[in-house]
Image (cartoon, rainbow, N blue to C red):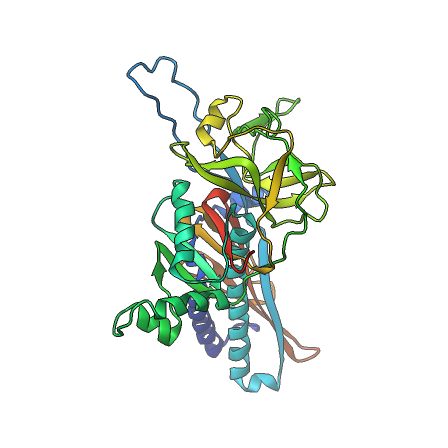
Amino acid sequence: MANGFSKEERVAFEQLLEGFQDALVMSRNVSIYNTDQTMMERSNDTIWRPQPYIAVSYSGSNATSNFKDVTQLAVPSTISIQRHVPWVLNAKELRDMLNEGRISQSAEQRLASDINQSVVDVAAFQGSIFIKRGTATGFDDVAAIEAAMNERGIMFEDRKLVLSTRDYNALASDLSKASRSFGNDISDPALRKSFLGEIASFATYKADYLRRKTAAAGGGSITISTLDGASNYNPKATSTAVTLEVSNVDNRFQTVTVSSTTNVVAGDAFTIANVNQVHMITKEDTGILKTFRVVEVVNGTTMVITPPIISNQVANDAAAQYQNCVVTSKSGTAALVFQNTVTGYMNPFWHKDSIEILPGRLAVPADAGAAVMRATTDNGVEVVMQKQFDINTQTTKYRLDTLYGVVNKQPEMSGIIMFNQT
């Protein structure tokens, strides 16, 4: 083939793939769900993935009135992110194949960074748990995240925490002083390599690409009604249109009405007066105010939040199953208190099963005038390299592509910790 890859290019691609796999740090810390690509094309690249069931138990031996429907919730997962890096080399530049190797290595680094960024972004912007801390001090900060997840009944294993470089190093500083004697596997790595490792049940990672969140500017006078029926969300698996068409429902988000959304922006975190977090399994009141995140501001009095307010004030089988909070004192004007009070990095954390990558596949024809090489990484992400020569300009076009989707299946199993908050 005129546009076929040379032996040097094939070797370079194999080396590139190895580096690409090494750089996919975040994708190795989330779940991977492989799909049938023909089916995905026919369904607009969207598949509904199930959320975990939460069972309800009863006391006593008589179960006569306890047989009720179990609601299976699902979320839409979409393969919607295609990233590519293109470049051109002329006939003179191709005399030195190292040019191509260096550029392709840069392309690999960028695409891997894009995938890692997508993972941390979906955790940071949709995770509903918000931990507000002052100056980063070390173990106590991570222990606060552990406490928040334990109080919600989230599984103990496979917990991940990604920290900005400054916040990570601040925690490492604490651990480097944790022991006055050296020669141990905690103080030494913390001092010599600013390495944390596993702390308080979390595998920790350092990142240089985390997003910063500005301080909330919504003010202290915004209110919401917590009266029966006002904001009490009842989950449902499907909805039926007037035309009798049945469709799935995404229960991760709720549209609520507040007194004002002036200066409120997506990503803001808040609590509601007298709305406490409950343990997701036992439904016991933890005595801790539940945190919510703003997903979208719709208009002057309406916004989309996550998670929905499922208090089961008005008894409902599905709400009893998925209840996530309790209203200890009902009010028509319950105050919203914003938690992100100082601009800073959003350090995301999550349980592995809450975030999912859906690898995609590009059906690039190999006999249409361009040479094509493709390979799949260990976690299912496919990389496609294409090459085409232009005789008019004596230049060769290259491009490196990847296609994937990232979904936060359960925002209540993920969140962020922000430091230097007042």
